[in-house]
Image (cartoon, rainbow, N blue to C red; front, side):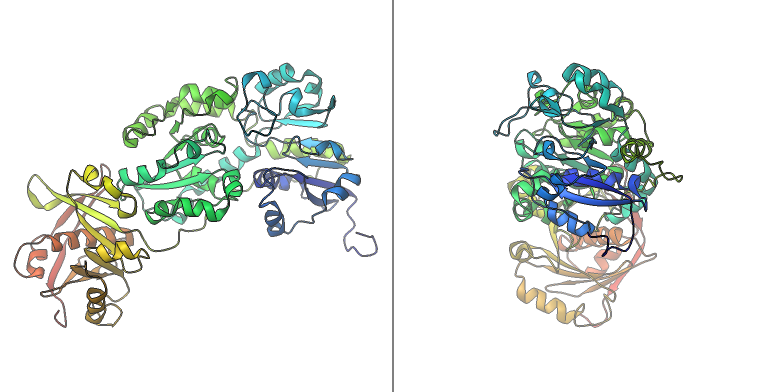
Length: 570
């Protein structure tokens, strides 16, 4: 910009260079190191990048001042900061400070357009002559390493670059550490009730990734893990999203999303998911290292390991962690990963960073050497990651399986599974018992809604006689949903259950429950009503109070309630 048109008068210019959304997110992590009125930031996107989709939107949403590549390459900046290598970085007319693209320089590099993973003979990406030089010239002027162990590997792969290297820690790991006190807030934002375990499934990109090798894995575990004990979130590498398109990813995962899958968006949210997680299932991407380093039990897929340097942090973690068998039941594998947690945490925490909590300061020192300025007196701000966007849409249609404990009708062992992913697995999952299908009134899948045994409505006034929750609503449901045997309208304390034929019943709990607990409790009462004995519905339900539900090894729910004929009759 011409000096005559500007307002502020920064004395130095920094160019931020990105080639993908992943690289842009890494640059965003270090921006607090450049908060200085003396510095003007510019952004540019490398030319010819394979995964350029999404970058323009990312920079626009950030409100960045973006220069065309040709202009950025021609002009002189005090320093260009990038998480990229290759592309056309050698064209820049500015000194380059390179920060890590992921954690620990884990992968072997293979040049070419096949997209195949690297092999040992090709050298490590970011630490090898093939990836650091162009026509014999080392491209980066400064190379940030996350750990001191990488100095030896750099000396082996590109000894001429060793004088340019410095240990900077890992800014992504530091943000995760800063986010740990916010774990409860993240879990709440993901819609998790206390005691429900979050399984985060992560996949990097390429065909040897977890998602590339086993695209059905997420659906299978949603059909296996009881809904009231486990929630499942999927974190896909941004290259998966932008390589195939958001439309395609959501299409491929439509059934899983209908079953309650938390699909974490590509730009942000994965770190909040890792902090919130009780278990992490990953592959040869960096997420497994970040998760294990903060104490999450990890299961790592076997595919793609030949592309990982065994001397890297990820390579060491792979030798310590349990290996995923994607075709075997997941729950015993999660338990095994929990048994190994202390070992995997120790390995990952040792190798993820040599300077935990100090990365922004170290990167700032390096950047300001190029600027020729003294850094600001105040330390750069280390920010926790933002809260994730809460899940949207109706709750999934769940098939309820309930059986008495020791023959006591007031003690039930309960398991709920999402109908959208059961398919032909239903008999295997429940030993031949078909259970009772409870669907939300807002269920968008016409087939599921039409075959549901119970249509459920969560509302503020289940017994108030309103048309949207009363007898008229039930009559409409029975007319439109031929499979429905019962309707149920409820809040946190009361429910009205109306059978297709017979007298309606109102249930009032002695104490209100958490909304998710109320949904479980009243869904089980609906299951008992559908399978009930002859006689009035109210009398049958009243005989079950007090009722104790065992919905998992760590979850027991007990409540006293009264049941009586509903006001206004059927």
